[in-house]
Length: 96
Image (cartoon, rainbow, N blue to C red; front, side, top):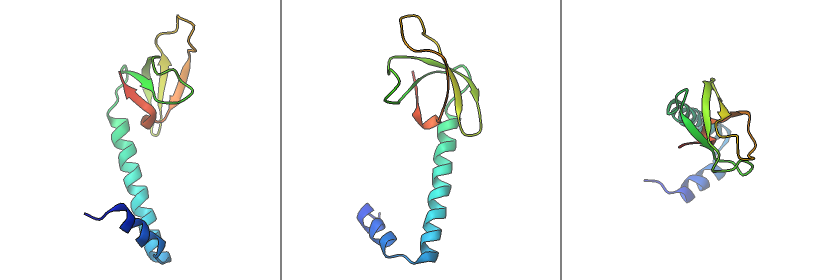
């Protein structure tokens, strides 16, 4: 297996054509990871949002799954926490 330092060194020394191939491979892999993250959720699931501005104890319910984002609604708005609806990248969601 190739280590990260070798990969970074290769990128540093690559020409334009090689760099474009690397960029395309990265875009494809990033798309695959996003799809995998999105497909692990279903409407009605209880989730949390892993973001510095959102309380990690707050729970949300998935109400809609879009192509790139997931729409969630706060499910425990009663003890002074900020509630409402958010459209969130699947990568920020954590199953509860």
